[in-house]
Amino acid sequence: MKEIKKYNTNPIITKGDVPFIVNSIFNPGAVKFNNKYMLVCRVEMPNGRSSFVLAESDDGYDFKVADKLCLTPEDHKECYKYVEWGIEDPRITPVGDTFYLTYTGYSKYEPLVILAETKDFEKFKVHGIISEPSNKDCAIFPGQINGYYWKVDRPTAGNRNDIWISKSPDMIHWGEYKCVMKPSEGTWEAQKIGNSSPPLKTKDGWLMLYHGVRGFGSSIIYKIGVVLLDINKPWIVKGRSKAPIIFPEYDYERVGDVGNVTFSNGWIAEQDGEVKIYYSGADINICVATTSIGNLLSMCE
Image 1 (cartoon, rainbow, N blue to C red):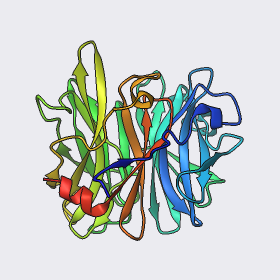
Image 2 (cartoon, helix red, strand yellow; image 1 turned 180 degrees about the horizontal axis):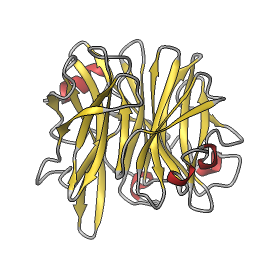
Image 3 (cartoon, rainbow, N blue to C red; image 1 turned 180 degrees about the vertical axis):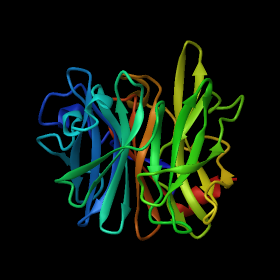
Image 4 (cartoon, rainbow, N blue to C red; image 1 turned 120 degrees about the horizontal axis):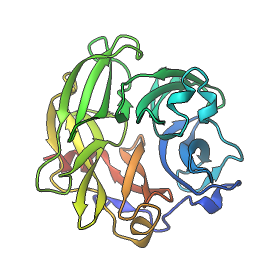
């Protein structure tokens, strides 16, 4: 297998595959459930505000999009005013028989992180806000490390756009914050970075995708890298890709609502070590690329 192989019939989902009117479908969280590939996709509705819809597949490539939304801002009754402008970019972490979703809520109060859970992708329980604004790009580690749950996110503080980590006894109350990664000056990720995927446990540590942004003339360009975190002290970076592993190349990644964007917030690891990375091009579609855990580890120099 090549290091990263983009599927030859990308994109695998576009707005034409959605059985109701949307402006776009993109940035899905991804997980396997009942031997099916499950994507929780962001759809931007005609009014410009986003909700989530499910897409299912038997093989990870040919997806059917549900005929109705699964989670909307209106479902966030107690914290509706903090998600009034939309919910965006879910990451999905399985812990036991429960799937935890972390995603961005938008409103006049700036972006912040929301936590919800489901056991069957039919009913969702919204726990509420687990960050102060401005914060986004949050993912929870699967299971506990040293008796605590851990999450990474990307607070914005002045001109700082770094990835931070914190821990919790219950996924609701978080503390002991540490900065894990900062953008590398003068490179493809010079402007800002943020988490892209729930961490994946390997024999060498926690693998995690992240996105990097660089100003390019009058615009910006989004690319995807990979980082390896210590298995017991996940605030320690053991290795990090020097170059991006996925970047805009084709028209479906370069031309759209936001040009020159490859953005991921979901991946699925197979039992044979293959990894399917679900990502979006130009904020208008859903694509997939394949690699292996071994290849990803080798990229973390």
